[in-house]
Image (cartoon, rainbow, N blue to C red; front, side):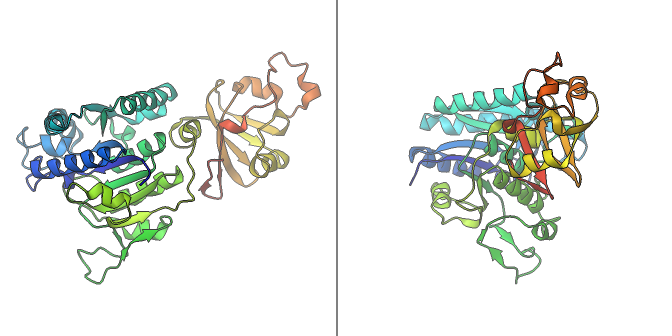
Amino acid sequence: MNKKRIVVKIGSSSLTNANGEIAEGKLKDHVKAIVSARRAGHEIILVSSGAVAAGFKKLGYPARPVKLKGKQAAAAVGQSLLIQTYAKELAPFGITPAQILLTRNDFSKKDRYRNAYSTISELLARGILPIINENDTVSVEELTFGDNDMLSALVSGMLHADQLIILTDINGLYDRDPRDDYNAKRFDFLEDVSEEMMEAAKGTGSNVGTGGMKSKLLAAKTAISLGVKVFIGLGKGEDKLLRILTGFGDGTYIGTEMLSSVKNNKQWISLHSPIAGKLFIDQGAEKALLSQGSSLLPAGIYGVDGVFDKGNVVEVYGRNGLLGKGEVLYSSDEIRKLMGKGREELKFEKVYITNEVIHRDQWVQIYEGRDEHE
């Protein structure tokens, strides 16, 4: 088997008992599987839920809190319990865990996004097991990932993982909820995730975690768009990850061998960057961007909306709407001076430094509802 970089996401339902506390038997089983996969030469990054579920009982809550302050307090208590338990179980195998808590802000800020990538890469190079969770204690509602399914998808893309394994309490994806319909049919393999499947999965999930099956499908769709294959399903025993990696997992495999990795700068532009303004371009520039793989030049721009600086990300619109977005090499004021001008005219502009307003390497195409990452 080829050595692979694997992101393993363990949900609350796969880590805690019915009372919402960490189930040591379940956690030990996950640890043994991680050890087996590492011994086989694979790199493992763990995205582990369970902090809120592990902490709320210690605060005296009878059930998982629903208000933000309750979740954050439970996470503050539970996260330390979670990482301590992992460290204790990993110690006999000589594995050191590293706790990494992330928020949406760590992805939306370009320097923090790069730092997260560099830090996790260094940990892997040193043989450390990164254990990642959302920083629920300080997250504000509008800046959360929603659940750890999406966090695991974004991490798997950022790290150019070969596969994302989402372990849950249902053995894969079905055409209907198998808990309500005994005739539900499981999908063993899917090339992609359709909108029909997203709608059918709405509302299915555990009462312990935050992510139902719809969130897992959305995460899978995101991971596939970033070139990462996905497995969603059950797993038990120390060889469960190895079984999944060899195609014998009890669940659904999503994605084909034709997937290609997406560069980190394009991932950031596509999924994480704040939008600072808009550019409007003519038909010639649109054709050059969409069909010829060219950069955006000043001559093709006829309109600018917003105030932004060099290095900001803007949306680009053509005659039929949004075409994509990219990182600009000029400010909005400078673009207004340069737009519509050809190379000869540009020579007389003091701000003119480079031909491109958006270089093709800093451009992400979004056309007819599809994000092409080109």
